[in-house]
Length: 468
Image 1: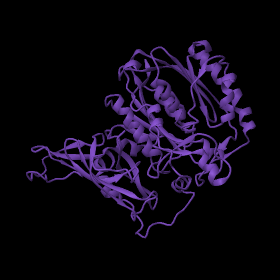
Image 2 (image 1 turned 90 degrees about the horizontal axis):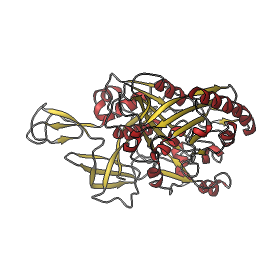
Image 3 (image 1 turned 180 degrees about the vertical axis):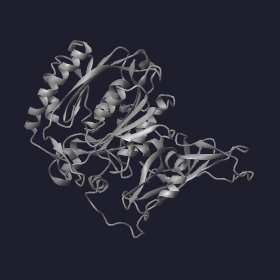
Image 4 (image 1 turned 60 degrees about the horizontal axis):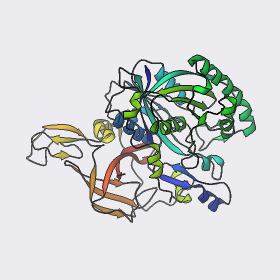
């Protein structure tokens, strides 16, 4: 049996009310909210968070490979998956590579993993933007998902892969050059005309391959960035009365590359054994696949669930901040020196600390050092340390300050000193928090973020965020 051993999802904290777009521009917008990656998040950092949620849910099972798929890569001509690999503290023998460039790339990554023979992590993430006032701006959203694909010998399979099929077509639906900030779209009726025959073809082929009938399907996940074609896909596939999963458009928006996985995660969050799930993704063609949940789904703990993350969102984000974070509104920076990019040699030397947040513990006294040290603060032992991963250790705010002059795309900066459970004190930034409500004693967890970008170099590191 091969299929999904585990999954993790990540929906960022911030939401933009679509009505805020209408209030600012007089058009666009609509009802509900869309999920927004914070100023210190990108596709890579969100994939790390989804991967952390996955690995916690599978009791630390280590994949043999990591594939990362995104249509909004932070780097070109540099592998983004290696940052994910390092932040998850995976061994160097684990392969990491990008399979990206367009939303359909995630299907290539998933099929490669499903057709393979080794446990493979597939992560997908997008930060979706559109021209201000456009449908993409209001209707899209940001999120990430990670799957662990493998055989039942690697770990209990919670959703067995039954098979699938694809239909590919070359037509101009949406496109974006590498130097553009948003995609261009062709007329909607044309895309519907191109997609629906491919839906019929791929669905018929997938049903034939698996020996299933539409009546055997308990729920269908249907998604794609072409809304009109997606709305007509169930009928084109001949699904009849099959239930279609909620598309989360009113709360999260369409997240592009990871969206099929996000919807599938939402379905699996509430699934019981024996449910047959059809997944259909419209992107430069149509890909259809079938999964069936196993008895192992009953004991799987996906924390946090998609519903939990949606409920925990903050919809107070103003439109001006959204435009600033997306780079469409350039504001006057503070009177401070421009940020300096991190240098490659020290980043390499401190890789375990910088990316995986691994400190050191004195073997004799148990004192934890952040960052790792050679000389212990207790007893003075020298070079008698052991590595101690701290990314998943809870902490408490010991003291804090609000800095309204430091460089930030979202001032003010909240600087905190935190004490970790079991020892270790560290000074860092607090993100996803209201400066007016921060208090000594607050519980926090660590999150992988982007401190800044300078000279085209992303400086990734760890920040604290409010627990829960």
